[in-house]
Image (cartoon, rainbow, N blue to C red):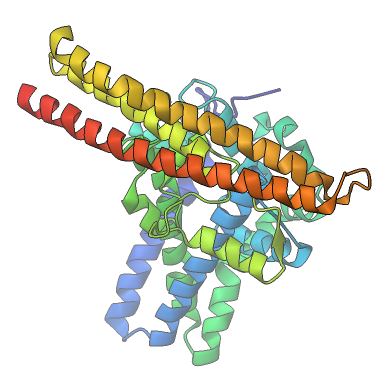
Length: 393
């Protein structure tokens, strides 16, 4: 399989011209239109609406549905996501997903199409200037190629993209007599902004932010990119748990893509929403916090005499946390195993069955409370580590 569709020798002049001229046309055209006459408010609303729909078609469609299969949805929804995803002008779903799966498989290596290790500019847009489309063999997206809608979109991508990206917004704006505004503002300007918002995930979210769940790859949780990419900015979480339909797991995390997917499920239009268990997320978070704190203290010049007392204090806390998480994993598996016996005619008795389920729930709840107490103790220990780090600084 070819894993490097980025040529080091050839330049992709089509991409260079398109991605260079589009923002010039968008900005110059918008300024000229605003100079000549006030832009109709309906055109600005169309641009904002179209930006949101095409952006969500990339995040909920190309990314979380097709690339990672973090949920399933009905064909009319898939069709809408493919149509408006094409309108974002970021390539066909097949091309986009092939690049993205390679990005996850080879993160931060030479085989990563938009590796941040090759530079901020390369990760942001430079990789597109050397993209060799002839190198695609789509071996890593054979499952998607078998989807008739995705195959149709790939075959007719350019025609669909031009119609959805430029002609449709211009046509809609004709309803209030502003086709040029629809073409430039809801078309070119909207597209330019969404391009660079998406590209920011590959550049900004691999450079700035917090590595909350893994220190082993460059992806970071970055609140700014989450705001402009409909929730994609919780990128360290995503790289650690790519199968999860969520990127922002907290209720207060700005993740409109997650809200859209959840809403579709409430409307019976999406199913099989995949999510990682809370205790698994906690395990990775605590492990990462432990590693980062020790690394900071070491870099700050702390000696073993200073670090050892803190490690002695935190070791039993961490042991308790990991034991509680292990216990929760075991209880969950045992509970699900018993749950499957509900329709087993050989089960001894209905009452015994429900008593057993109730027992597992009680044990799980008690272990969960213990874990909460251990995490509070760990939080206090973190403050002690941070205080030592501050003193050393």
